[in-house]
Length: 554
Image (cartoon, rainbow, N blue to C red; front, top):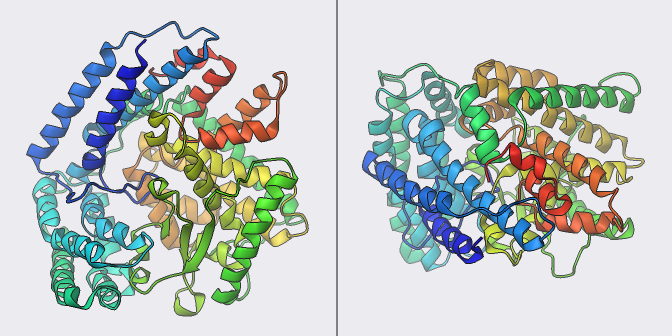
């Protein structure tokens, strides 16, 4: 057992990963990239990634493993850290060779081109000369990235994902992706130093033209093949090697079905015998003014911190960063369709996290499911995204570097979803029936995602069927449902993490509560601090439950 060897491997791997990891719609694993970084996805680059990864894997496999069935905290910590590195390596392999979005999914190249630009916009702070130069350089690479995408995708793109990407690009912001990007660049020009505005305009025009060309190409004969799910064997390997979840897909489907029934039953009780669904979002009636929403969220954030402390649930140190709503900036507003409009990056945990909220008065088509809920009651966002903000900030100062860098949404999303129901059960929404109904809508959504995610991975659902299921059973607006179904199709195993992670936490809590000297606050403090670590490994480290290690790779 060599702790230094594990730390050295982890350090080298994450330095490599920061350059290789593809951009994603998910806001949790968002990275600050190395200076001068650019996405590289030629076949030669992919072969290089595979070779590098094989070297890391060989080093990981060669490490001598101790007997895990011990009460020695150092041995347990080593087992957890070693398993985390193995999981991280398996994730990179899964992305490259199983999902292979670089080969099959046109939206992958939208993410690696203007998605990179979008990432740069969401970080807080002024657009000084250096930052503006980075943005201009990112726009300047859009044409080359999309050209590489067309080369890689020809004859290999999945037809369903090609059609969905084309439709998304055509409908973006109601005017098309190219015009949406132009509008963003025009607004951004007012924020960058004057000498760089012309360079920004030129780069923006070229990027928008390239994006429109990519959209036209998708409508041509690109040799697309039918979309193929990864299948049960690959998904089973994902569970045991990447997500470190000691369960079979069928067990998780059963969890999702039972939790969906539970959520729907409690929704009936909450609404006194009927489901009063709006069909668009969790709320009804006119939306409040954006200024009211922003001011109320500030007050609620302070109330929530007091609630955590007053109920002895979770420590709230004064140094813990805040999570604020802010008005949607004009340079971000046209690109909302690209992903979550927030800045909760764990690598910037010293600054307050922020989530940009659209102004209902400026959205003639109305707000989507989540924005609608937050506009009516910002607390419904605080209990999930606010939990992410706190958990990531606390994990960012974890003394173990392996656990600072490791990412798997099973724990991250599980903690945030657990936090929602935990606070509701603790009495946060007493007397607020509308907000409680929204929480039940969230319960339905997260439970339903299990069946949608696994159904897509196993080929039991098409992308259109998954979107219909979400729209009808949550219910939610069609645009959000389609975005979710498309995202889950290209990221197998992500959609289930909310419910599966929460279910694991509840089991962990129930067993930990029987231990001598148990404290709920201490349990939560540790859970948030270790919130990047899969719950099965946390269970092993705290309770010594070696049975979970028999079903996952460590």
